[in-house]
Amino acid sequence: MIFLICSSVLFIAAVSVVPKKLLKSELYVIALFSIILGLCTDMVLSLKYHFYGYFSPAIQLESFLVILILFPSSGILFMNFYPLKKSLFNQGFYIICWTLFCLLFDYASIASGYFYHNNWNYSYSAFSYPLLS
Image (cartoon, rainbow, N blue to C red):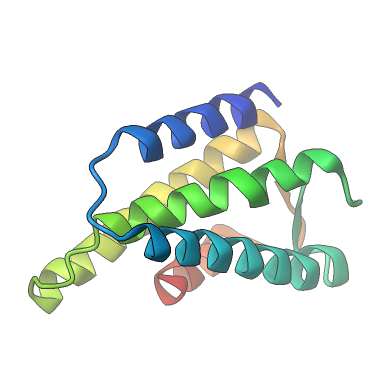
């Protein structure tokens, strides 16, 4: 739980202090999309198929911290710095870097105990993260 709280504070701080390249309306859309995508994905992959989950296999209030804080803030950070007007190589490199960051964050989340895998492994994450970007 300490890792989740520290991560939430760091992500909120990062979103608060970075210079915004996006309009406020775009930030709200990104945040809302991240929350909805996170809820839908977690309902199917976690609650229905039990591939992974937060804390223990049930709906818990702490799980909403992830969906309501980490997902939107990481989505805003990702889109704020996305190299849209750069080459495809730069865009691909950016997506690969974020995928590596997400895989490391998954590992740290599992090591801290707030996230767990059942029928899921890192290769599924490595494949799905670039597609979700």
